[in-house]
Length: 450
Image 1 (cartoon, rainbow, N blue to C red):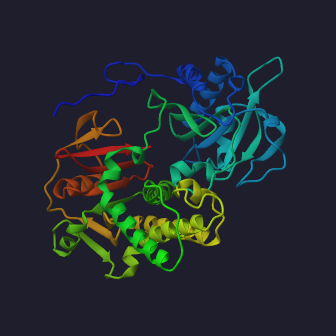
Image 2: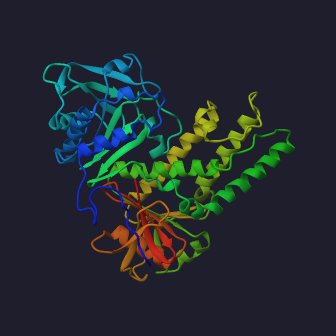
Image 3: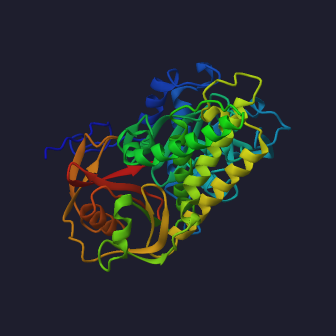
Protein backbone atom coordinates (compact mmCIF):
# COMPACT_ATOMS: atom_id res chain seq x y z
CA UNK A 1 0.00 0.00 0.00
CA UNK A 2 1.41 3.34 -1.00
CA UNK A 3 1.86 5.84 1.82
CA UNK A 4 1.99 9.61 1.73
CA UNK A 5 3.57 11.75 4.41
CA UNK A 6 2.29 14.97 5.90
CA UNK A 7 3.94 18.17 4.71
CA UNK A 8 3.41 20.26 7.82
CA UNK A 9 6.15 22.83 8.41
CA UNK A 10 8.73 22.06 11.05
CA UNK A 11 10.86 19.02 11.77
CA UNK A 12 10.28 16.42 9.12
CA UNK A 13 12.14 13.91 7.06
CA UNK A 14 12.23 16.21 4.07
CA UNK A 15 12.47 19.63 5.70
CA UNK A 16 15.41 18.93 8.01
CA UNK A 17 14.52 21.95 10.12
CA UNK A 18 12.65 22.72 13.32
CA UNK A 19 10.33 25.58 14.23
CA UNK A 20 10.75 27.53 17.46
CA UNK A 21 8.84 30.22 19.39
CA UNK A 22 9.75 33.05 17.01
CA UNK A 23 8.21 31.11 14.09
CA UNK A 24 5.19 30.37 16.26
CA UNK A 25 4.76 34.09 16.96
CA UNK A 26 4.55 34.90 13.26
CA UNK A 27 2.34 31.87 12.63
CA UNK A 28 -0.13 33.07 15.28
CA UNK A 29 -0.14 36.64 13.95
CA UNK A 30 -0.92 35.40 10.45
CA UNK A 31 -3.89 33.36 11.69
CA UNK A 32 -5.18 35.56 14.51
CA UNK A 33 -7.81 37.64 12.73
CA UNK A 34 -9.33 34.60 11.02
CA UNK A 35 -9.90 32.86 14.37
CA UNK A 36 -13.40 33.29 15.74
CA UNK A 37 -13.96 35.03 19.06
CA UNK A 38 -16.73 36.65 21.03
CA UNK A 39 -15.08 39.99 20.23
CA UNK A 40 -13.24 40.52 16.97
CA UNK A 41 -10.46 42.90 18.01
CA UNK A 42 -7.03 42.42 16.51
CA UNK A 43 -5.70 45.33 18.60
CA UNK A 44 -5.57 43.00 21.62
CA UNK A 45 -2.80 41.02 19.93
CA UNK A 46 0.59 42.56 20.88
CA UNK A 47 3.45 43.00 18.44
CA UNK A 48 5.60 40.10 17.30
CA UNK A 49 8.49 40.85 19.70
CA UNK A 50 6.21 40.67 22.77
CA UNK A 51 4.55 37.52 21.46
CA UNK A 52 7.92 35.88 20.88
CA UNK A 53 9.03 36.79 24.40
CA UNK A 54 5.83 35.32 25.83
CA UNK A 55 6.00 32.11 23.81
CA UNK A 56 9.72 31.67 24.43
CA UNK A 57 9.35 31.90 28.22
CA UNK A 58 6.51 29.36 28.19
CA UNK A 59 8.41 27.06 25.84
CA UNK A 60 11.55 27.00 28.00
CA UNK A 61 9.46 26.53 31.16
CA UNK A 62 7.91 23.44 29.54
CA UNK A 63 11.37 21.85 29.39
CA UNK A 64 11.85 22.17 33.18
CA UNK A 65 10.68 19.89 35.97
CA UNK A 66 9.38 20.70 39.44
CA UNK A 67 10.40 18.04 41.96
CA UNK A 68 10.53 15.45 39.14
CA UNK A 69 7.08 16.45 37.90
CA UNK A 70 6.51 17.87 34.43
CA UNK A 71 5.73 21.58 34.35
CA UNK A 72 2.20 22.23 33.10
CA UNK A 73 0.29 25.52 33.18
CA UNK A 74 -1.81 28.05 31.30
CA UNK A 75 -0.67 31.65 30.92
CA UNK A 76 -2.66 34.57 29.54
CA UNK A 77 -1.12 37.71 28.01
CA UNK A 78 -3.57 40.35 29.19
CA UNK A 79 -3.90 43.34 31.45
CA UNK A 80 -5.71 42.68 34.75
CA UNK A 81 -8.09 45.52 33.83
CA UNK A 82 -9.74 43.19 31.29
CA UNK A 83 -11.16 41.12 34.16
CA UNK A 84 -13.67 41.98 36.88
CA UNK A 85 -12.37 41.77 40.43
CA UNK A 86 -15.47 40.20 41.96
CA UNK A 87 -16.46 37.35 39.61
CA UNK A 88 -16.37 33.66 40.51
CA UNK A 89 -16.24 30.43 38.51
CA UNK A 90 -17.95 28.41 37.19
CA UNK A 91 -19.76 31.23 35.36
CA UNK A 92 -17.21 33.98 35.95
CA UNK A 93 -13.47 34.52 36.24
CA UNK A 94 -11.89 35.22 39.64
CA UNK A 95 -9.00 37.71 39.38
CA UNK A 96 -6.31 37.53 42.07
CA UNK A 97 -3.70 40.30 41.86
CA UNK A 98 -0.31 39.78 43.49
CA UNK A 99 0.70 42.60 45.84
CA UNK A 100 3.76 43.00 43.58
CA UNK A 101 4.52 41.72 40.12
CA UNK A 102 7.26 39.22 39.25
CA UNK A 103 9.67 39.01 36.35
CA UNK A 104 8.37 36.76 33.61
CA UNK A 105 10.92 33.96 33.55
CA UNK A 106 10.80 30.16 32.98
CA UNK A 107 11.89 29.47 36.57
CA UNK A 108 9.06 31.67 37.93
CA UNK A 109 6.55 29.86 35.73
CA UNK A 110 7.92 26.56 37.03
CA UNK A 111 7.37 27.63 40.65
CA UNK A 112 3.87 28.96 39.98
CA UNK A 113 2.82 25.88 38.01
CA UNK A 114 2.52 23.90 41.25
CA UNK A 115 -0.09 26.30 42.62
CA UNK A 116 -1.75 27.14 39.30
CA UNK A 117 -3.52 23.94 38.19
CA UNK A 118 -3.59 24.20 34.40
CA UNK A 119 -7.18 22.94 34.29
CA UNK A 120 -8.50 25.65 36.62
CA UNK A 121 -6.09 28.57 36.74
CA UNK A 122 -4.29 30.95 34.39
CA UNK A 123 -1.08 32.83 35.15
CA UNK A 124 -1.61 36.50 34.29
CA UNK A 125 1.16 38.20 32.27
CA UNK A 126 1.40 41.69 30.80
CA UNK A 127 4.03 43.89 29.15
CA UNK A 128 6.28 45.79 31.54
CA UNK A 129 5.65 49.51 31.03
CA UNK A 130 8.92 50.55 32.66
CA UNK A 131 12.00 51.55 30.69
CA UNK A 132 13.39 48.01 30.89
CA UNK A 133 10.42 46.57 28.98
CA UNK A 134 9.90 42.82 28.97
CA UNK A 135 6.98 41.04 30.64
CA UNK A 136 5.72 40.81 34.23
CA UNK A 137 3.56 38.26 36.03
CA UNK A 138 0.79 40.19 37.77
CA UNK A 139 -1.43 37.48 39.32
CA UNK A 140 -3.70 34.49 38.81
CA UNK A 141 -7.12 33.96 37.23
CA UNK A 142 -9.33 31.13 38.45
CA UNK A 143 -11.42 30.00 35.49
CA UNK A 144 -12.87 26.68 36.63
CA UNK A 145 -12.87 23.65 34.35
CA UNK A 146 -15.86 24.22 32.09
CA UNK A 147 -13.58 25.56 29.34
CA UNK A 148 -12.41 21.96 28.84
CA UNK A 149 -15.84 20.70 27.80
CA UNK A 150 -14.89 20.19 24.13
CA UNK A 151 -11.87 18.11 25.17
CA UNK A 152 -13.26 16.42 28.27
CA UNK A 153 -16.94 16.19 27.48
CA UNK A 154 -18.57 18.61 29.88
CA UNK A 155 -22.12 19.86 29.39
CA UNK A 156 -22.11 23.46 30.61
CA UNK A 157 -20.28 26.38 29.00
CA UNK A 158 -17.79 28.29 31.11
CA UNK A 159 -16.94 31.98 31.23
CA UNK A 160 -15.50 33.50 28.08
CA UNK A 161 -12.02 34.98 28.00
CA UNK A 162 -11.12 38.22 26.23
CA UNK A 163 -9.60 37.70 22.73
CA UNK A 164 -5.98 37.70 23.91
CA UNK A 165 -3.24 35.05 23.57
CA UNK A 166 -3.51 32.13 25.99
CA UNK A 167 -0.72 29.55 26.10
CA UNK A 168 -1.32 26.04 27.36
CA UNK A 169 1.69 23.87 28.30
CA UNK A 170 0.97 20.18 28.86
CA UNK A 171 4.23 18.46 27.85
CA UNK A 172 7.92 19.28 27.34
CA UNK A 173 8.51 21.24 24.16
CA UNK A 174 4.79 21.53 23.48
CA UNK A 175 2.86 24.79 23.63
CA UNK A 176 -0.60 25.59 22.31
CA UNK A 177 -1.87 29.12 21.66
CA UNK A 178 -5.57 29.95 21.95
CA UNK A 179 -7.81 32.90 21.15
CA UNK A 180 -10.60 32.57 23.70
CA UNK A 181 -11.07 28.76 23.47
CA UNK A 182 -10.06 28.27 19.83
CA UNK A 183 -6.66 26.83 18.98
CA UNK A 184 -4.74 29.25 16.76
CA UNK A 185 -1.25 27.73 16.73
CA UNK A 186 0.63 24.82 18.19
CA UNK A 187 4.33 23.99 18.46
CA UNK A 188 4.92 20.28 19.08
CA UNK A 189 8.11 18.37 18.40
CA UNK A 190 9.48 21.28 16.39
CA UNK A 191 6.42 21.31 14.10
CA UNK A 192 3.88 24.08 13.67
CA UNK A 193 0.19 23.36 13.30
CA UNK A 194 -3.01 25.34 13.48
CA UNK A 195 -5.48 22.58 14.21
CA UNK A 196 -6.24 20.08 16.94
CA UNK A 197 -6.80 16.50 15.82
CA UNK A 198 -10.00 15.29 17.44
CA UNK A 199 -10.86 11.81 16.19
CA UNK A 200 -14.45 12.29 17.31
CA UNK A 201 -14.72 14.75 14.39
CA UNK A 202 -13.68 12.07 11.90
CA UNK A 203 -16.04 10.12 9.64
CA UNK A 204 -14.55 6.66 10.26
CA UNK A 205 -14.98 6.55 14.06
CA UNK A 206 -18.74 7.29 14.22
CA UNK A 207 -19.33 4.69 11.50
CA UNK A 208 -17.93 2.06 13.88
CA UNK A 209 -20.84 2.68 16.24
CA UNK A 210 -23.69 3.46 13.86
CA UNK A 211 -25.68 0.39 14.96
CA UNK A 212 -25.35 1.55 18.57
CA UNK A 213 -26.91 4.91 17.77
CA UNK A 214 -29.64 3.29 15.68
CA UNK A 215 -30.52 1.11 18.66
CA UNK A 216 -30.70 4.16 20.94
CA UNK A 217 -33.10 5.89 18.56
CA UNK A 218 -35.25 2.76 18.25
CA UNK A 219 -35.64 2.61 22.03
CA UNK A 220 -36.39 6.33 22.13
CA UNK A 221 -39.10 5.96 19.47
CA UNK A 222 -40.79 3.21 21.50
CA UNK A 223 -40.88 5.55 24.52
CA UNK A 224 -42.14 8.40 22.31
CA UNK A 225 -45.07 6.32 21.03
CA UNK A 226 -46.02 5.36 24.58
CA UNK A 227 -45.95 9.03 25.61
CA UNK A 228 -48.11 9.99 22.62
CA UNK A 229 -50.63 7.29 23.51
CA UNK A 230 -50.78 8.80 27.00
CA UNK A 231 -51.48 12.25 25.55
CA UNK A 232 -47.97 13.73 25.79
CA UNK A 233 -46.31 15.13 22.66
CA UNK A 234 -42.51 15.16 22.68
CA UNK A 235 -40.26 17.43 20.63
CA UNK A 236 -38.28 15.82 17.79
CA UNK A 237 -34.55 15.08 18.17
CA UNK A 238 -31.67 16.35 16.11
CA UNK A 239 -30.03 13.27 14.51
CA UNK A 240 -26.62 14.19 15.91
CA UNK A 241 -27.70 14.29 19.57
CA UNK A 242 -27.19 10.59 20.54
CA UNK A 243 -23.71 10.69 19.03
CA UNK A 244 -22.80 13.91 20.86
CA UNK A 245 -23.91 12.63 24.25
CA UNK A 246 -22.12 9.27 23.94
CA UNK A 247 -18.94 10.86 22.61
CA UNK A 248 -18.85 13.40 25.43
CA UNK A 249 -18.98 10.55 27.94
CA UNK A 250 -16.06 8.76 26.28
CA UNK A 251 -14.08 12.01 26.24
CA UNK A 252 -14.58 12.17 29.99
CA UNK A 253 -13.20 8.65 30.39
CA UNK A 254 -10.13 9.51 28.31
CA UNK A 255 -9.58 12.73 30.23
CA UNK A 256 -9.75 10.98 33.61
CA UNK A 257 -7.23 8.35 32.56
CA UNK A 258 -4.93 11.03 31.19
CA UNK A 259 -5.08 13.02 34.40
CA UNK A 260 -4.48 9.95 36.57
CA UNK A 261 -1.27 9.16 34.62
CA UNK A 262 -1.62 5.40 35.05
CA UNK A 263 -2.90 4.54 31.58
CA UNK A 264 -5.43 1.95 30.51
CA UNK A 265 -7.05 0.15 27.60
CA UNK A 266 -10.70 0.13 26.55
CA UNK A 267 -11.80 -2.37 23.92
CA UNK A 268 -15.03 -2.36 21.90
CA UNK A 269 -15.72 -5.76 20.34
CA UNK A 270 -18.33 -6.49 17.67
CA UNK A 271 -21.55 -7.42 19.44
CA UNK A 272 -21.80 -10.73 17.58
CA UNK A 273 -18.37 -11.69 18.96
CA UNK A 274 -19.29 -11.19 22.62
CA UNK A 275 -20.11 -14.86 23.23
CA UNK A 276 -16.77 -15.89 21.73
CA UNK A 277 -14.97 -14.28 24.65
CA UNK A 278 -16.07 -17.19 26.85
CA UNK A 279 -13.98 -19.57 24.73
CA UNK A 280 -10.52 -20.04 26.32
CA UNK A 281 -7.69 -18.32 24.42
CA UNK A 282 -10.08 -17.01 21.77
CA UNK A 283 -9.60 -13.25 21.91
CA UNK A 284 -9.76 -11.78 25.42
CA UNK A 285 -9.76 -13.49 28.81
CA UNK A 286 -11.94 -11.18 30.93
CA UNK A 287 -10.91 -11.80 34.53
CA UNK A 288 -13.72 -9.78 36.12
CA UNK A 289 -16.66 -10.46 33.82
CA UNK A 290 -20.12 -9.20 34.70
CA UNK A 291 -23.12 -11.49 34.85
CA UNK A 292 -25.81 -10.86 32.29
CA UNK A 293 -28.25 -8.30 33.65
CA UNK A 294 -29.50 -4.70 33.42
CA UNK A 295 -26.29 -3.28 34.89
CA UNK A 296 -24.30 -4.20 31.79
CA UNK A 297 -26.54 -1.92 29.71
CA UNK A 298 -26.60 0.96 32.18
CA UNK A 299 -24.74 3.33 29.85
CA UNK A 300 -26.97 2.99 26.77
CA UNK A 301 -30.06 2.95 28.98
CA UNK A 302 -28.88 6.19 30.56
CA UNK A 303 -28.48 7.87 27.17
CA UNK A 304 -31.99 6.82 26.13
CA UNK A 305 -33.37 8.24 29.39
CA UNK A 306 -31.61 11.54 28.68
CA UNK A 307 -33.01 11.64 25.13
CA UNK A 308 -36.51 10.93 26.43
CA UNK A 309 -36.36 13.59 29.10
CA UNK A 310 -34.98 16.22 26.72
CA UNK A 311 -37.73 15.54 24.21
CA UNK A 312 -40.36 15.65 26.95
CA UNK A 313 -39.11 18.91 28.47
CA UNK A 314 -38.79 20.67 25.13
CA UNK A 315 -42.16 19.33 23.93
CA UNK A 316 -43.92 20.82 26.97
CA UNK A 317 -42.11 24.15 26.60
CA UNK A 318 -44.08 27.24 25.66
CA UNK A 319 -41.23 28.33 23.38
CA UNK A 320 -40.84 26.36 20.12
CA UNK A 321 -42.12 22.99 21.38
CA UNK A 322 -41.64 21.57 17.86
CA UNK A 323 -38.01 22.70 17.54
CA UNK A 324 -35.69 19.68 17.19
CA UNK A 325 -33.81 19.00 20.42
CA UNK A 326 -30.04 19.33 20.11
CA UNK A 327 -26.93 19.61 22.22
CA UNK A 328 -27.61 23.29 22.86
CA UNK A 329 -30.80 22.34 24.71
CA UNK A 330 -28.89 19.86 26.85
CA UNK A 331 -26.39 22.62 27.70
CA UNK A 332 -29.00 25.23 28.48
CA UNK A 333 -31.54 23.15 30.39
CA UNK A 334 -32.21 23.87 34.05
CA UNK A 335 -34.36 20.79 34.47
CA UNK A 336 -33.47 19.11 37.77
CA UNK A 337 -33.95 15.58 36.46
CA UNK A 338 -31.66 16.23 33.50
CA UNK A 339 -29.02 17.63 35.83
CA UNK A 340 -29.17 14.39 37.82
CA UNK A 341 -28.93 12.34 34.62
CA UNK A 342 -25.87 14.32 33.55
CA UNK A 343 -24.32 13.63 36.95
CA UNK A 344 -25.06 9.93 36.45
CA UNK A 345 -23.30 10.12 33.07
CA UNK A 346 -20.29 11.63 34.79
CA UNK A 347 -20.29 8.85 37.40
CA UNK A 348 -20.44 6.23 34.64
CA UNK A 349 -17.34 7.78 33.09
CA UNK A 350 -15.59 7.56 36.48
CA UNK A 351 -16.63 3.93 36.81
CA UNK A 352 -15.15 2.93 33.44
CA UNK A 353 -11.99 4.97 34.00
CA UNK A 354 -11.43 3.32 37.39
CA UNK A 355 -11.89 -0.14 35.86
CA UNK A 356 -9.34 0.75 33.19
CA UNK A 357 -6.81 1.52 35.93
CA UNK A 358 -6.67 -2.19 36.81
CA UNK A 359 -4.37 -4.51 34.90
CA UNK A 360 -5.94 -5.53 31.61
CA UNK A 361 -8.56 -3.94 29.39
CA UNK A 362 -12.13 -2.82 29.98
CA UNK A 363 -14.23 -4.73 27.47
CA UNK A 364 -17.50 -3.49 25.99
CA UNK A 365 -19.50 -4.46 22.95
CA UNK A 366 -19.96 -1.90 20.21
CA UNK A 367 -23.47 -1.51 21.63
CA UNK A 368 -21.68 -0.22 24.77
CA UNK A 369 -22.70 -3.20 26.87
CA UNK A 370 -20.15 -3.50 29.68
CA UNK A 371 -18.82 -7.07 29.65
CA UNK A 372 -16.10 -6.70 32.29
CA UNK A 373 -12.57 -5.54 33.02
CA UNK A 374 -9.13 -6.98 33.65
CA UNK A 375 -9.23 -8.34 30.12
CA UNK A 376 -6.02 -10.04 29.00
CA UNK A 377 -5.73 -10.20 25.24
CA UNK A 378 -4.78 -13.70 24.15
CA UNK A 379 -1.10 -14.31 23.45
CA UNK A 380 -2.15 -16.96 20.94
CA UNK A 381 -3.45 -14.36 18.52
CA UNK A 382 -1.11 -13.87 15.54
CA UNK A 383 1.72 -11.44 16.17
CA UNK A 384 1.80 -8.16 14.26
CA UNK A 385 5.08 -7.07 12.69
CA UNK A 386 4.06 -3.71 11.25
CA UNK A 387 1.22 -1.25 11.73
CA UNK A 388 0.04 1.81 9.83
CA UNK A 389 0.08 5.23 11.48
CA UNK A 390 -2.61 7.63 10.24
CA UNK A 391 -1.40 11.18 9.76
CA UNK A 392 -4.85 12.65 9.13
CA UNK A 393 -8.32 12.20 10.57
CA UNK A 394 -9.53 9.69 8.00
CA UNK A 395 -6.35 7.68 7.56
CA UNK A 396 -5.92 8.77 3.96
CA UNK A 397 -2.34 9.87 4.64
CA UNK A 398 -0.41 7.09 6.36
CA UNK A 399 3.05 5.78 7.05
CA UNK A 400 3.99 2.19 7.81
CA UNK A 401 5.87 1.50 11.03
CA UNK A 402 7.58 -1.49 12.54
CA UNK A 403 6.32 -2.43 16.00
CA UNK A 404 9.65 -1.51 17.64
CA UNK A 405 9.68 -0.97 21.37
CA UNK A 406 6.04 -0.12 22.06
CA UNK A 407 4.59 -1.24 25.38
CA UNK A 408 2.48 -4.27 26.19
CA UNK A 409 -0.79 -2.30 25.99
CA UNK A 410 -0.13 -1.26 22.41
CA UNK A 411 1.09 -4.69 21.34
CA UNK A 412 -2.04 -6.30 22.76
CA UNK A 413 -4.30 -3.78 21.01
CA UNK A 414 -2.53 -4.44 17.70
CA UNK A 415 -2.93 -8.21 18.07
CA UNK A 416 -6.60 -7.98 19.00
CA UNK A 417 -7.61 -5.63 16.19
CA UNK A 418 -5.61 -7.75 13.74
CA UNK A 419 -7.28 -10.98 14.86
CA UNK A 420 -10.78 -9.51 15.35
CA UNK A 421 -11.87 -7.30 12.43
CA UNK A 422 -14.36 -4.68 13.61
CA UNK A 423 -12.85 -4.31 17.08
CA UNK A 424 -11.80 -0.82 18.20
CA UNK A 425 -9.24 -0.28 20.97
CA UNK A 426 -8.44 2.91 22.86
CA UNK A 427 -5.01 2.84 24.50
CA UNK A 428 -4.12 5.56 27.01
CA UNK A 429 -0.45 5.68 28.01
CA UNK A 430 0.93 6.74 31.37
CA UNK A 431 2.31 9.88 29.74
CA UNK A 432 -1.18 10.88 28.59
CA UNK A 433 -0.90 9.78 24.96
CA UNK A 434 -4.04 8.31 23.39
CA UNK A 435 -4.23 5.93 20.44
CA UNK A 436 -7.28 4.59 18.67
CA UNK A 437 -6.58 1.27 16.93
CA UNK A 438 -8.64 -0.70 14.42
CA UNK A 439 -8.38 -2.34 11.03
CA UNK A 440 -8.59 -0.14 7.94
CA UNK A 441 -8.41 -1.77 4.54
CA UNK A 442 -7.10 -4.95 6.13
CA UNK A 443 -4.21 -3.27 7.97
CA UNK A 444 -3.88 -2.51 11.68
CA UNK A 445 -4.07 1.28 11.77
CA UNK A 446 -3.69 3.68 14.66
CA UNK A 447 -4.57 7.33 15.17
CA UNK A 448 -3.21 9.58 17.91
CA UNK A 449 -5.85 11.65 19.69
CA UNK A 450 -4.92 15.16 20.87
